[in-house]
Length: 254
Length: 254
DNA sequence: TTCATCAATTGGTAGGACCAATCAGTTTGC
DNA sequence: GCAAACTGATTGGTCCTACCAATTGATGAA
Image (cartoon, rainbow over all chains, first blue to last red; front, side, top):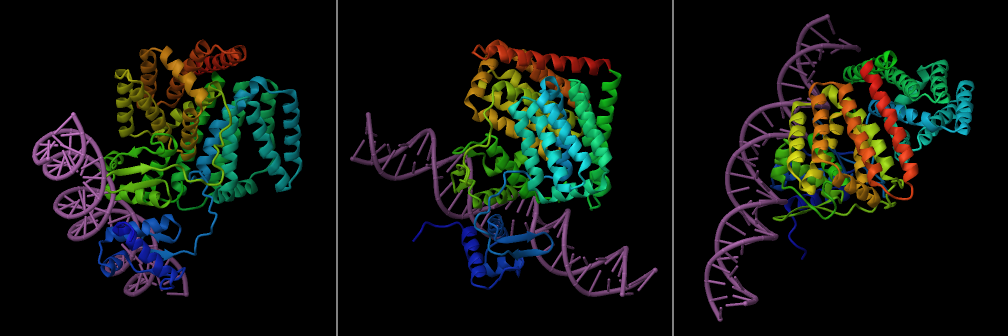
């Protein structure tokens, strides 16, 4: 026979078999770790190790305080994204930091063509109330600036952040809520401010304008989000906002 | 933040990151369960659970009596790195921007433990002339600060930049040349300046110190690089440097 | 009924103990 | 001198026991 398998592998196989033979069909809850341990005559640790392995493979769902549940057979091509699990807040905070710097970089050498294009995009965003077109324009606006930073790494990072934004369900939801809540005038004014700074080739102003844009986004999120973690979120957001207001003040008085 | 994750998930993520950022490359053996437990300040059980999950996913190979080994990244369709082809200069410029912001973030809530660790690392870098140990310490220094930003996206981005650094041959060469050229005193002083700012919980000073560190790196690159694209490189570097000197001046006078 | 409260259940983590496989260095036997 | 056998330190594997934390459902008050 095959080489000696570790005990937790054996247990893992037994559980898997009981799932596939219908003893524990998808959706059902299997016995508690303590009971399984006794039934298989192994320690609870071993049961846990087996279940955790099966969870990693997508066969089980372990819920603290509730129990362990059998999932539907995992779909073939899973394609796990390499992105970390993040909150909408973290993502926006990161964009605040990075895109502001990109704007400052872009101001140093942005081309007239890019400036024209940005102008068109701002108009589109102001005119269209169609979510689809407006969001598309918003995206191109930010990515154009990223490209004009003339730094492939900066551009790559910012594009990656946008990719994360579209791939993470939770993040999309929050953003949709925020967009519904904000006035087109606000967005428009902020984008125009960024554009104006770029036209003037003023890195500091460009950074400041972009920071302002994202800072408002962050604060909007506080109003929109109404989950359990609000306190924590609000605390972080306010701290972050305050930090940037202070920075901006120092810039201005400088 | 996302929902509370179980500890073994956190550990699992940390290990996965250390693998992907090059701390433990494929084929290498990672520290024993007992050592990892102590290092992460969790129990051995938790380490085991995390490693077993990663084994199930095909990232690790656990061999009884021998150790735990990192496997080649499981082929997930693409295989090729999504990294853009970049120059050492671009990469360092991006790090200047992003890591400075991360340092500012970290200053707001860095833990005493992290501060202690950073202190040790600075000492290691000062003492060791061994390239291996010193570089390792350098990386951990920067990645620790990234982690202390308490923003998973920021952390993810900076880790990605380090990954790019180790994976791109050309970048590595330039860095090696720069390292050979610089005095240990310079590096040490700069790192200590960053650390001091973090200890004082001073975001602005932290950002400034980190900018100073990377700005020197950028200028060093100019001296070292003597290739065809020097003119362009020099022009960009000088512009970038000037920009940050101006910024710093404005900060100070603010 | 509705909602706050509490206690039992269930998973999560810690720490200590001991077993079993492995491996490097040493000793032994030829 | 060299290979086989031994030895001990190291590392993963398993168990136990105790306690923490999230969940759930029963209980009782409004």
